[in-house]
Image 1 (cartoon, rainbow, N blue to C red):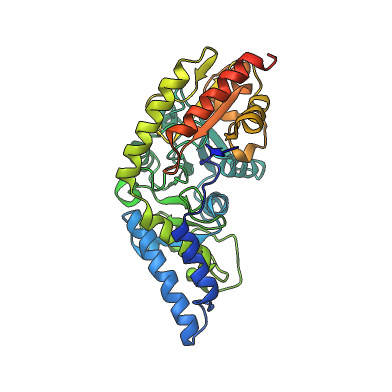
Image 2: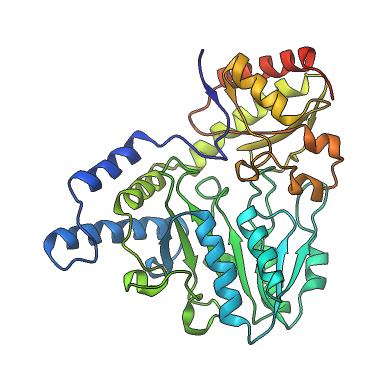
Amino acid sequence: MNIHYLDNSATTRVSEAAAQAALGMMRDNFGNPSSLHEVGLNAEKAVERARQTIAGSLGADAKSIFFTSGGTEGNNTVLFGVAEALRRRGNRIIVSAVEHSSVYESAKRLSEQGFDVQYAPVGSDGVVDVETLKALLTEKTILVSVMTVNNETGAIQPIERIARLVHKCSPEAVFHSDAVQAYCKMPLKPKKWGVDVMTVSAHKIHGAKGCGALYIGSGARIEGGRVVPLLYGGEQQRRQRPGTESTPLIAAFSKAVEEADITANGTYIRKLNAYATEQLSELEGIAFNSSEDALPYIINISAEGIRSETMLHHLEKEFGVYVSSSSACSKGKRSYVLTAMGLPDDRVDSSLRISFSKYNTKEDIDALVEGLRDGLATLQKR
């Protein structure tokens, strides 16, 4: 049976070039980039070239890029680090109601520690209600975190507008955006937009798992120009993120970014999305949870009356089609993202996320539609 992998928002297949870049660092350029001899200096040069590549993709300066183990570490660093750095200024933290769990759960933990955490609501399209967000901003606000693209629905947030609003109404606050699902899929300009801190990751763009980066702008209103680090014990990366850099993963990350063609890939994915939407619309019992304005890499649907896990395993076992139920990080729990959008429980419990990459084809869509049609006809309704 052929494999039709449509769960690219969970992770992507590492590209051949990225894999070879990692192998080269493991076998040939294997030095510790902190070592002072030539082998170490060669590794350091590779890390700095990668830093330049990531910075260029964000329209940023290389000195503003710090490598991490991925999106979860990056988001935790921002929430806990900014809260600690700015707690003398105030205690209000605002996050959207549809953030990735690494932001959502961190905010919950900060609330338990005495911070005034507020959740900005979203509309039925999954987009933050900017006027309500505005009403939450006060002089005591120290951090606002709104993701660029939602990982379950593909909803695109008006980040530039929100950044302007935050800096106008709460000029001492730091504005952070988790851009993991948006990175290398749409243009990102954090410095130009007024985003102080941005999180990106490698394994959503055909790099390897275990590597990501934080953009920390020089204009971020943080004492000393950095957030309080999560880790201690080394001078690497100006002590913002100490520890020996994973040079193979960083090299793979850089190569994946170099390979990413936002324009060409975007054109192809929009066509694939349009084909999928047309085919899915012909199936009775399919409801769309993603809006027409969502990032085309993600389509969230509900196979009404059939639990997500039941349909998911049917697609996998009988048709070789791989999708997910909400976010991979949720481990099958009911989606708080779709609930925040106002969807009824039965729609939420039957939701499926379909997510594309440049390696997908119409044949993958055809297999998905065939599997859904069969599942809708044969699986027992709840």
